[in-house]
Length: 152
Ligand code: FES
Image 1 (cartoon, protein in one colour):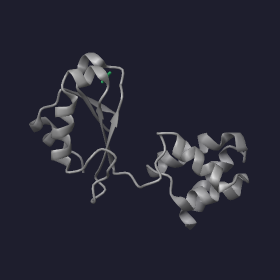
Image 2 (cartoon, protein in one colour; image 1 turned 135 degrees about the vertical axis):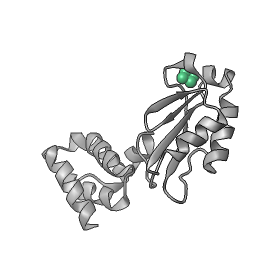
Image 3 (cartoon, helix red, strand yellow; image 1 turned 90 degrees about the vertical axis):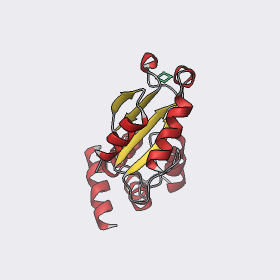
């Protein structure tokens, strides 16, 4: 709690307590923690004088925010139309089998969080998987296992 307070205070102070900087402050907190801890949101509410319910509304509206802890490594599988046509459902099956988690889940050892997205803007490479912002085009099961093994 104390650590989260100090972190939030530093971030809010950076924006000089400007209420209109709420989303930017939440993005900063998300980036530092990989999620938005409840105590951090309470502190944001106190510091900016914005009702906690309003902060939760915003936090649940934007997909960039997570109200649950995320794994150390982010894994995204594109399920956009072009990737679907090129075999994204089979890629997703291979990824879920390798990581033993489903989309929207985080592994119990906090190593991976798996999510799906609709288009990453590189349709010609599909089906596409992104691990910690690194793009992988049409990865085989063996390549997925190697990529996962390289993630601590
Ligand atoms: S549909 Fe997957 S990158 Fe566009």
